[in-house]
Length: 385
Image (cartoon, rainbow, N blue to C red; front, side, top):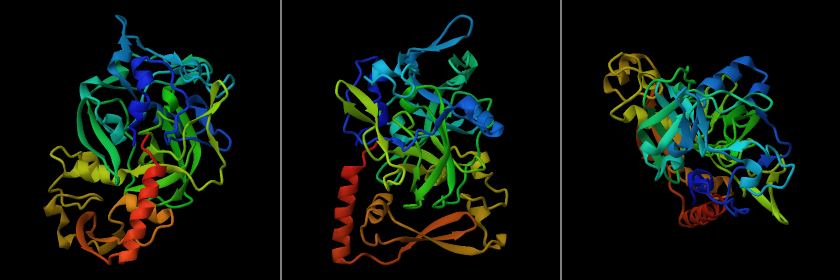
């Protein structure tokens, strides 16, 4: 499975353009529904994305002159990827490798594979990589450029693909709120990020297609490499998760050039999203929790992701509940693909205090074999960008 920032290595290093790859990446479903930020019809959504969706770019490609003006080392998308003339955004500059979302004053969420093997000191998060109007890029200033101070929590496994990065200072924001309730099949969602490293594109009308597990879900969203880490938002602009995988190769060879891959809108193959829930839980359990996201320990309030024992008091008046989730999202994916019961795990919860409980049922000998075969097929079909 190949990390996206390695797939985007040609952009980072200024190398020759790649030919169409067999890697599994995000694609366009039917008509291309991506729009420029200035074309977003909802004013609140447009302003929120402008202030809370930074581009992740290698430090060597960011230049600040003596006046404080910021430029990127960028190449036109079409020639750098051997696109056929007429393909979408052919002449737009391509520079960044991944996308992110501001979730606290100095914290951003992105995909785990976007930081895997890439030193924090070499990462920059830059706001303002978008068009103000047709052909006019927003003027970026030195205040828009943030260094990576540390990767607070990250996971890159079969179950989760997330990273929460602390910036070197607070951003202007405001941060976008997170939603810890699960995505619902059929629910409308939107996406904001940097496909193929070009200026921000927004998908205003996506749809949740499957809720595979507590850790991951699927959505029909027009996305491409570079959208790794892009936030997926509900209709109230609450962050549900970060985009991590796509269903097929992003480019299709057509003679001497590449075309953007397009899938029928009715296809069951859709984008994979890593839920924000495990990322926030890991943050709250870390040595540096966020008061905005986790609450203050000892405040007497049991938050949605509570790790402070004193705030999980049974006298809090909140009802107990049991949430059943698969033990591993990869096995859940196998089940979605037609595999048998994956043997879920019961989580006993009191308000937001999650306590792993017993495994409820195990697959039979034949069921376990089916899960293993299904998982193997899924792993072969779906590669990390």
